[in-house]
Length: 162
Image (spheres, helix red, strand yellow):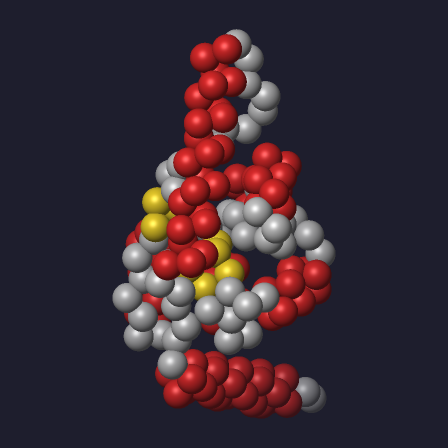
């Protein structure tokens, strides 16, 4: 699953050529959630993909293919789940069509390198999943926060009644 800023038909074509399912962050949210929940594992440059994968208990591996992927955001979120998150760098594919022989050759080389690295990651990569007890504790804290907020808002609304 790519970051929204690098979602492209080239990535989709390359991923599907490996026999893998491509999850576009541009798809309908229910389709994205269902695909993540149904996956055995997820390789993603989308932090939101990793967050949902972890929530759905789908092991995930974070990758960086662009300067748009900001490691400090991943690390900050990882710390909230007691995870040490390190992104694996992958070559980026340029958007648009290559023009000229040199550009076409460079693009083909990058596609080959990316394909080989993805295959290696799928077989030997360090997929991550937070511990159940840590995720449960964070979810409980969030539920408590929502309950307290709801209770506060209901009391405030009652106070405003004449």
